[in-house]
Image (cartoon, rainbow, N blue to C red; front, side, top):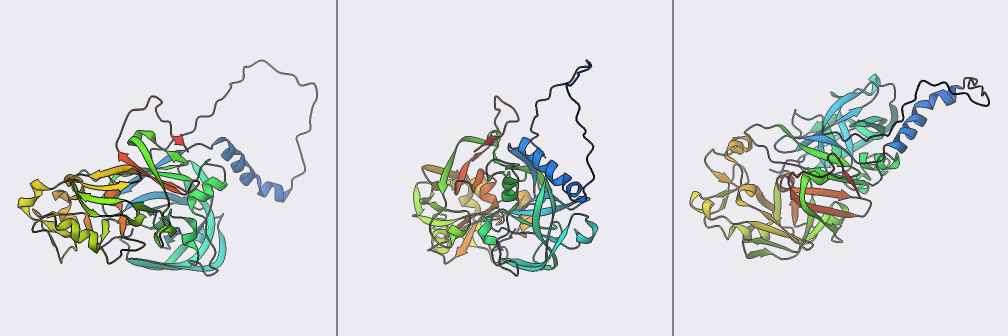
Length: 403
């Protein structure tokens, strides 16, 4: 079954401290003006706009690995209510469960008097639309989102979902059918970030738990300490329907040196847990592993014990770069087997069949792929970037790289 699913970068502002020497102005200005309710009401908005003009560099927030999805914390309303939301690049709407956020408790909320309804591969949500102040890291901005009183298919560990896909995916989710700006777009429109770019760093869980804070989301650029080598960028694919998402072309998939698929089109999606390939590519892949079989309980492939030591790297050619997954990266660690409902001692694979899709969407590179590769979602240049994930020491510590 496919589950749909702070390292805060602080901008430094140069300050000049005043000495105690009195300074005399050649003239005096009366700074007391008549109180104007309209002006006073807009003070916060003006000041935040001014602050945003100072704070236009990349910043990062932590992400929590929930084993089958990643979550981030988003603040909503005044006073702030923090909610844990699934981080999903495969959709573009933000919604929160009504048990986690009450719009009537916020002094800054605006009721849009509009409904929303959204369907996912493994669930749905519907309810009412609002606009309120949202908080990501140290920054505040206005965000439209839904408050759901009817939802299904989501675990109790999360309180909603935030979509980071292309904004056009949000069309027809609300009753008016309008496009709803995503959080990165609103950060960009508010001049908090200079580029509408999101960098994502995931890591595998290192123990048998189902939760570990080991990821990072960077807004407005990338974090060069979280990947090795250069980022390979490719344009959004022209193949439909993948071109509606963060879709890319993969020129070749190989098991060792054996090609199991030619050029295919698909998407990069943080909200999908597994690495999904079309049935044809999946069958060709597991045909290289004698005795590999689909398990009816988990819907995942089982690798026979005798074949585990013989497993080879699986590679994906993206642009001019070959991205390789080692056997340890595409097989499920034994300390996580019980979490997926499997039998301890059995070797399962994270690579599963997507279905008979050979045209516009023949793969989904989900969380278990992205735990090994840094990914970049660049709306400004309409492209996706991938690089080998890893930590490295940069000469300028703490610096994020704008694009």
